[in-house]
Amino acid sequence: MDCVIIGAGGHGRVVLDVLRQQTQHNVVGFLDSNSSLHGQRMDGVQVLGSIDLVPMLQRNGIRAAFVAIGENGIRRQFMEIVIKSGLELINAVHPSANIASNVNLGRGVLVAAGALVCAHCQIGDGVILNTGSIVDHETMISTCVHVCPGAKLAGRVTVESGAFIGIGATIIQRVRVGHDATVGAGSVVLCDVEPMSTVVGVPARHIKGVTNADDFQHWPAYATRSNS
Ligand SMILES: CC(C)(COP(=O)(O)OP(=O)(O)OC[C@H]1O[C@@H](n2cnc3c(N)ncnc32)[C@H](O)[C@@H]1OP(=O)(O)O)[C@@H](O)C(=O)NCCC(=O)NCCS
Image (cartoon, rainbow, N blue to C red):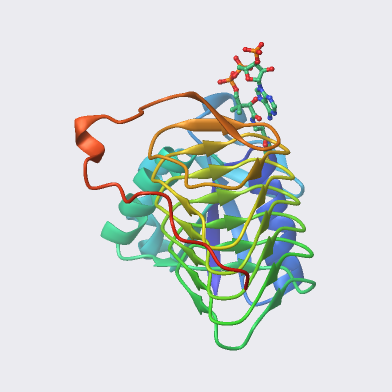
């Protein structure tokens, strides 16, 4: 099926390589809001124009798209535009990724080279499981989360929508990472992370963002943990 990649930056070029190796889709162009790229070829594929072209694509026989924007909020916005236009949001799964047979994978998901997704995980729409990341059993990842290269999520972790798990971070079992939270590169997360907050270090400590705000009165106390 002919498709476009939205986003012609470094992430878009990774996605192009994955889609080529996956061999199910024929990438006919990039779309990018940077007008200086329009008309140029990136790894042999032309940048056709901006996202404004999306409503016209179906008339030209293009039925699918992948949103390759690393920033979680912008990726969500562009995915909504794609869905409204009636295009199919495809997944990009590298042949070297290993996904257990009972994993529930959403739409518009990237599973990059060497990523591992173990039994009974749920992966929401627009999630990036970047190169060499590991998602262990029964972990639930909500929409538009970015799990950066080499990050490791143990069993029964929950990651809420829009969170960013930095490169090489480790999250122990049963931890909950709140929506739009950031886990710094290389951090080791032992306790729940509040929504919209940032934690860094080993063990991870809070450095910025909301703490104990009224908005989060329903935020659960630290989870009871057990080995799993
Ligand atoms: C967590 C992060 C977002 C914080 O960025 P920031 O908001 O600009 O924070 P700052 O750089 O101002 O750092 C604030 C403090 O946290 C410390 N810090 C920042 N990131 C840290 C990390 N990953 N581990 C340990 N400490 C860290 C800084 O040293 C600084 O400490 P200080 O106040 O004692 O000097 C960023 O450092 C990070 O780790 N980003 C992840 C990048 C990544 O994974 N990229 C992969 C893309 S695929």
